[in-house]
Length: 115
Length: 113
Image 1 (cartoon, rainbow over the protein chains, first blue to last red):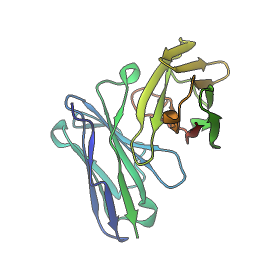
Image 2: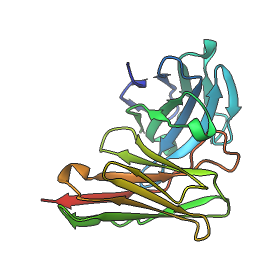
Image 3: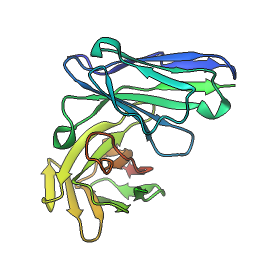
């Protein structure tokens, strides 16, 4: 069974440009999460999809970030326009259930560098 | 707000010894707590989940305890091996217990042969 995949693995862009990150969760996992780790800090939650609906987007830093999950399968996270402080590693995770059945499977991450 | 604290200093131990990592949480009472392992350049990998009504959970050489009075979880690796060297992350859920995880900074364990 394929794990969670993310694309690209690395992205280097200039301030003001747009970047779109993609996540393909494990097949059959309704729950999809985005997290990010900025340099020297802990991994922080961004948002949570259940199928195609946003259940919790309390961690989204500002309106430059837009996440979508059309059809309830893969998800994209767009940053527009990118700022220097957006640099970090963006992780996607998926899970079958929530709460006590909430083992999350993480992708390898996308390392975003904004110059 | 919810806060998770793990020893930020690296833990260095000799192969064969038991490693003990600490996770303290404040400002809420999670219904469960998870531990993940992360290797450089990779995403976290789930290890164990312990519920608030469980004092202890074991899986092979791993043991996790959960003390809701102290608001603390301990993670033990017995008979440690160099392959256990990694960063270990404590992750209880957010206060709504619906899905999002709150991560500590992680403790890096180095097991020397």
